[in-house]
Length: 276
Ligand code: C2E
Ligand code: MG
Ligand code: MG
Ligand code: MG
Image (cartoon, rainbow, N blue to C red; front, side, top):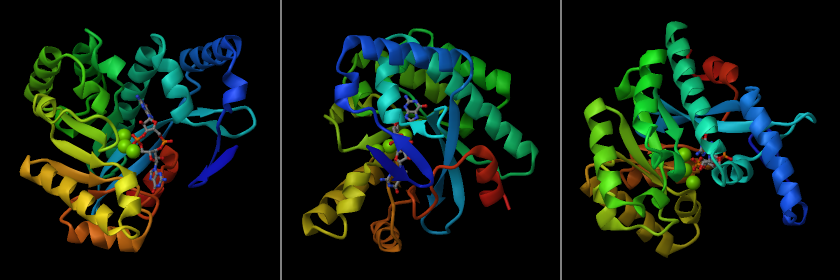
């Protein structure tokens, strides 16, 4: 099954192709080689201020290019990497590459966009994760205030003590934490408070339901209000139409991300499109 998202051709491995353990091992070996040989790529998607239309930030999204010109979706290969330790090397590569890219863009005259990087629960829980982020910022020269780490609700279910100390350390460093895909997982609202969150990303399922169901509007509105009450920047994911943008703006959502506002694109294209 192939699915089109923006211009990218995604190929999903069908379950029957991955059923055997052998197949999976093969895929994981190829992924490990791709990480080791620096064959992964990053695409970048703008985070847009719904009031002014200005690009405020950029999210780095991992891509696994294939020999046939397509990409394997991160929805496929991130879980694969998460099954082992590979996610740590992969995640470290993503962070370093994206930080370097932002610094390079700024040297080329681009605005000082914020950078959002996805962090899987396994990375977040790694003992050396904080030191890795700190070192990467030092090495690349990206100011900590420009970095946003996107974690998922799975992290909020982990150890409360770890979450709290990690959140405190990042806050002290100036690095912000965002809760990604909010509303899709099991949200432990009390644990959420321990994460020192600065940003809430409303999952696109709520955005896409906006025009269709009255109930969806109430749910979206409630999530946005929750975020605002907690003093968080609220970002809507998956904004695909002008109508959705207008509705979200009316609901006082600050930032939006989605195909209507800009699809993920390779770095060169991103700079050409948004730095002007
Ligand atoms: P995410 O962090 O929630 O990223 C947003 C996803 O929504 C991206 O999918 C993006 O291409 C897609 N998207 C953006 N705008 C729209 C829209 O208007 N409509 C629709 N239908 N989709 C839109 P992508 O790039 O396939 O990534 C999927 C997920 O894979 C990400 O979801 C994230 O959880 C994970 N991921 C991607 N890169 C990384 C990475 O470097 N590290 C980790 N740990 N996870 C990653
Ligand atoms: Mg994300
Ligand atoms: Mg998301
Ligand atoms: Mg999402």
